[in-house]
Length: 200
Ligand SMILES: [Zn+2]
Ligand SMILES: [Zn+2]
Image 1 (tube, rainbow, N blue to C red):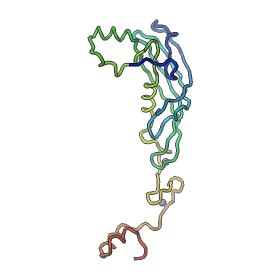
Image 2: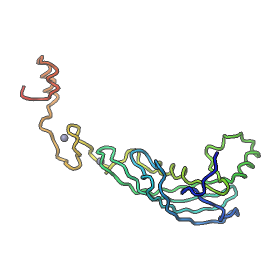
Image 3: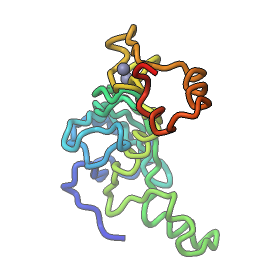
């Protein structure tokens, strides 16, 4: 594991907090969004402001971070492709374990190398990285299929018009499927049927 960069926007220094359990610090800051924050169809543009409101609390094993993040996600409606903006407010909580107390835990419990590391966030030289936690929280908060409005009717299957703009939209040309079947029975060339309905 490589060391954390103390200048990276989502890396926080906990040295001022100290290690006495119960000591707390309240931190607010605005940082630029990293790339790919969110899902492909709805994400916070890279560099857009993310407002963080955090409480850092020293506990026995490490530092407990509880916070909220606010940002604006942009994307498009899954049905009609209209651009949408979604004001996000996500909450998260994560325990960052002291490097050395993890070693103690491990030797006490005889835990094998690596088993624990995937799910455990670690403090490295009193630094913690909020980015993975923020990413998880944002993805969980996003709708699987973003919509411009809950009842978006989508696009006309015939011409692609946005039906929300034109609810009475209709095409005269639509041929009744029963008639289409009859014309086929009439023994005409099937290729003609694909070209819809000029007077037959
Ligand atoms: Zn829509
Ligand atoms: Zn249409």
